[in-house]
Length: 87
Image 1 (cartoon, one colour):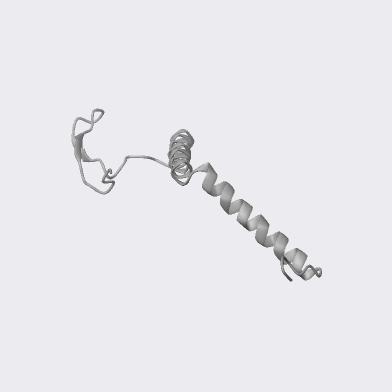
Image 2: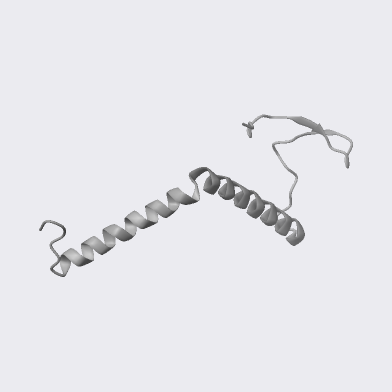
């Protein structure tokens, strides 16, 4: 697992000096840079969600949806006079 909070010192190739990698030099007032950051965040979030979906699995989500549908139908039928099995 990656440590996102560690401080690394890198070389600023454009300025020639060292800078901290935890403090990116991004000007969010610049629309081009703002769009680049927005797309990077979207891509990162999409990758994370894909990983979480794969971890949970399609069958688990389908099972949860089926159980929810069953509860809704049972409640609706019970409110309309159905007694259920053995009732």
